Length: 424
Ligand SMILES: Nc1ncnc2c1ncn2[C@@H]1O[C@H](COP(=O)(O)OP(=O)(O)OP(=O)(O)O)[C@@H](O)[C@H]1O
Ligand code: SF4
Ligand SMILES: [Mg+2]
Image 1: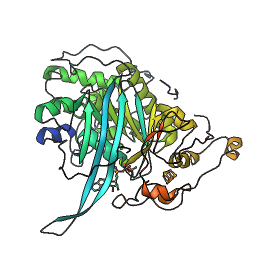
Image 2: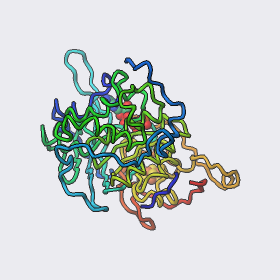
Image 3: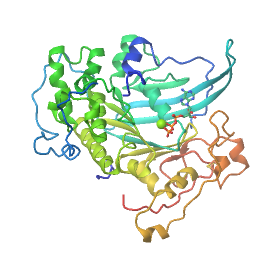
Image 4: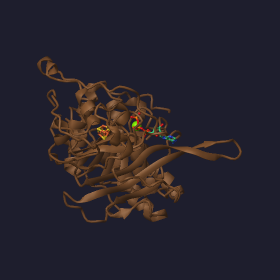
């Protein structure tokens, strides 16, 4: 891997993914009218106190706390959660083709009629291999979270396919869908609102076992939860504590433990560190990297902060208004982006070294991001692009590998541009 070493939601607010799937065949396409796009496209126990230094006591295994990698006794298991053979590194575990999500805009109170659509995700193609991290970046509102929600089944695609180990989730129903979904789990952005404050950590992490009852037998669940706590660098003795008794970084570890409960191969991480202090961000990123190495996990890692993604991503997808505009090897895109939008984003990343800062040409993007309900014709970036010509309004540039570059770019005039970076 080319990575650089560095380095759920109140249940009332966000429905459990599995519960949603269990109660409803999520993943169904919304209808044949879906537009086809070009493919480029609380009570807490009063005596339990949080250690003020808990963040330190995590991956390193502080005194009084077991090391994250400490060996624990195996809990009895009913069955191996993933019965399919382990994929080789390099095999696709997730394949997304022509994925579209248009949210209808309706008018009228009694007779609601569709008057338009928010084109949140519009023809996305992605591959994720075993053990690989795909970073997804883009401005607010470009469809990153909608993409993740489609993959996890919290939203139904308008059209397109989502294959996990070759099985198309959009075609599965009932028990088959539930079983396939087990393999793809999500770490949410905000560890403060994503954990039900009235549930103990043990109940939060063990909740997926209530739905997927065959994963761990009832009598072994507590022990399995304690193993998961250790795996993410938390003290297994804190199983009966409540979320408010943990710091932000520790809560995110609880979110990660919960996501790992069903032993998925794919973790979708939607801005998993952006709500945390900078000092804690690196610890959580390090934990994710450690887990990836130990468990062979594949990550789809969504972030605003391009420097965070650079640390962790093998591959990068840059999104603009619902489409991927540049896609390929992360290091290559960071060093020599070919799409004007990526070039602008990278030129705005702060450079700590003042000498290097002087060598940097910052590209200031003018104008606002257009509405996804009424995106520009042709290239969606054209209203803000300094290189735009007539053809950009007439022809949608396909996301393809262009001359003099090894990665794909959706620009008629894609051209490498060197970017001055600070220390990564
Ligand atoms: N349920 C919904 N109904 C209608 N529009 C929606 C819905 N969910 C998202 N959208 C719209 O889809 C677009 C993409 O939203 P999304 O949350 O995926 O963006 P994002 O890239 O995750 O942004 P951010 O970086 O701010 O989290 C936005 O214009 C948003 O308003
Ligand atoms: S296709 Fe045209 S408008 Fe779009 S990014 Fe390329 S040059 Fe700019
Ligand atoms: Mg989002």
